[in-house]
Length: 136
Image 1 (cartoon, rainbow, N blue to C red):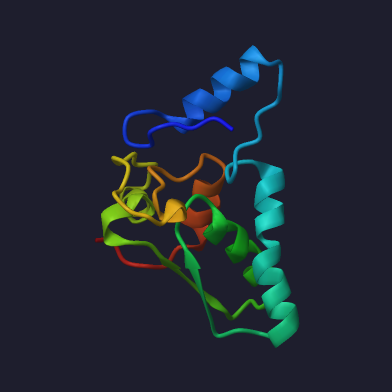
Image 2: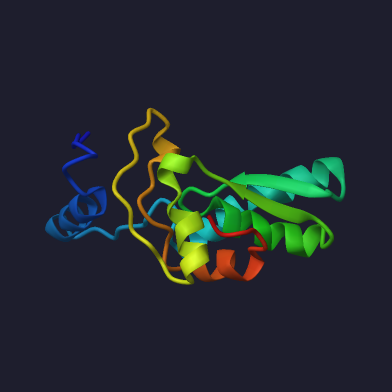
């Protein structure tokens, strides 16, 4: 296990350096086509279990919303997907409002999944197309 200080070190840079040093392939936890497909199964399984949905509320962390929006569009086309994220860590909201990926400081939170500093390169276009919210 490798520990780091999330407020002073960059986990993506650490991961890339370790992968290069050890001749490994780095698969990001949310910004990769295969991960996107896998995360979309959360909404797929929910819709298969419950039937069509009116609304689906999904966190706007790394990439879950784009993945779930794809699944919802295919399996429950009338479902409105609503993204939620804490005000202190609203990188996705800012990015969607600006139309480009915005990087923010690491939010101070105990919720690791809500401590994202930016949306992913693969996930942002998906989220942008499915987003119908309002800007801050």
